[in-house]
Image (cartoon, rainbow, N blue to C red):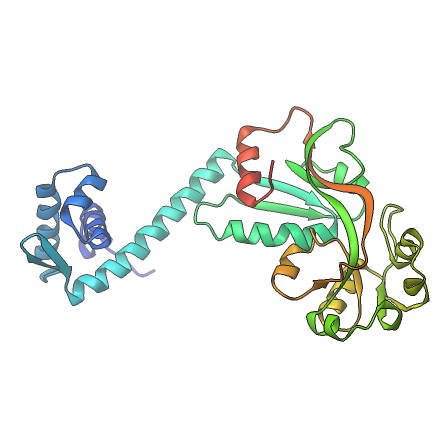
Amino acid sequence: MVMKNYRRALPPLDYLLFFEAVARHGNFTRAAEELNVSQAAVSKRIKVLEDWLGMTLVNRRGRNLSMTRNGKILAANSGEALDYLHSCLQQMRRASAGTRLSLAANVAVSQYWLTPRINEYLLSSDAAPVTLTASDKDTDLFALETDAMIYYGQDIPAGWDGALLFEERWMPVTSPAKAQREGGLAAATLLDFDKLTPKWVNWGDFAELTGNPEIAQAAKVNLGSYGNTLDTAIRGRGVALGCPDVLRFEIDAGRLVPLDAYQLATGRSYFVIWRTGLLTEQTRSLLRDVGIPL
């Protein structure tokens, strides 16, 4: 094991804290206000740090100051090191306090609606751990002990509280290039899937409920799963069915285009739900941080 005598190799931590504040503000007075000390105390700490290192870190010209070359190097690295230490301590506090968020949803909502939001949230340095369980069987989802669930149905189920996210509208979706070439759905390849639950809508249901003979006559390819139809549509190999609100990230990123000339309101909606009386203020705050409106 390599021995590391940090006490001798590194200056006292408060010297680096004071220097980082000065470098960030570019001003002794503002650094002192942030640190809640006098300007003289800040100036003295910086001078002691320079003496300890044996080099000048700050050029002082009256009230103006600037970082020397060595000062800029130390500012960049000390700021990064302090950020890393802060992040580590935040994670320890959250783990100690049990702060975390557990979510559940069907596979499509998990992949296309929730995961992008979770990933954006996790980029924050103070993000709490998030677990996500996906299943296309409602019985599996209801059996989980999660903080909240994205539920797809006509209403919030008994024994649960919740909030409406959006009403469901189905419409054809395809790649931008494919959308420009399409002359109509009759000549398109419609990407179909096996229904795992009666409330899902595939191309057969869509044709019947919209009464559109063009859709009924079009060539259809069954790809098994709903996710496969969307992936294939993104690659420009056909037209899938989708709810634009669920697929918002793919649409905004330009990977899918909704063909809004064909629409079907199913009468079902997407809700965020939780067991009655069990939503804490902490969980409510985390849901909002992840981008789930309440």
